[in-house]
Image (cartoon, rainbow, N blue to C red):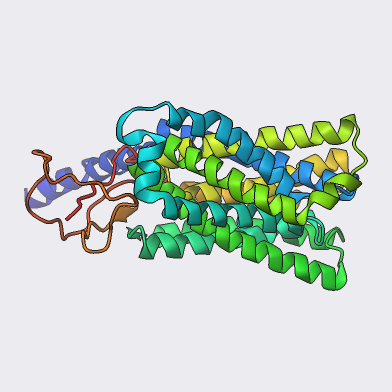
Length: 384
């Protein structure tokens, strides 16, 4: 009888019935609707980055229009007309004058960093190849990871590192295809100088992106864009008058050049306006991982525009990068709530808030995730 009972219990499909749904639920949790939407939004940003790179390369190579400051100036003017004027007509603490009174020097520094990041990257197109610019621009990812760890107090898990490495391997696969096809031509010392410009610009971009993430999530998207429009227009206008006024006179203006400048400004303005919306839902790290596919879009465009040869490694690169994004998003990141370290960009006195708890939060907790299913959670900031 004992053998019969054991045999009967052992024949029950209990393990099979529980393991299959758990795997299915895990896949559904990772590949959720929010994740797919976020991936799609990241690819929109990636297409805008691709368009910016192509128009810059056309201006620099085909029309010898060496005006990176002027190109950025047009974008900042658009930001000023749309977002700075919006702040000017607001009432209360969100008014332009109120913001300047509290944080003018912080936004001034951030605006200068953003200007120089754009300048260095756009200037690099004159000295190095498009694949080199987009490869070395990946240096922004480790910069963002480190700054997010130390200043935003974001804590990553092993799965996030694995996802990041997979994305970078996808870029390496693309570069390998370029080398096999003989498209990584050398430009001598000029190419080295261009590569150094890209590394410097990527570092400044990382600083700008991390600051943007903090401001967008804790203050206001319109405030960030309005301040960038104000200080960006001011500093880029001064830099334009000093460095590029002669270059503008040398340009053989025609409808093609004008159309390229208009297209560049429209793409850059769209990128600046749309990125904070995606960043509020995700993070600076996940956005920089998502726009890695811009390199591949540029190469696919090159198949038709520049008659590049096709390689199956490009498709493999797409697969590896998308796999890395899914792996990265499978787990939530969390923020350490430490009021001694994590302070607001703009000092807001909230001691009179009756909803503010009196105790401190010393333990880390899940605040938001970069691409995962728990991205609706927001970090709670406490000013002591």
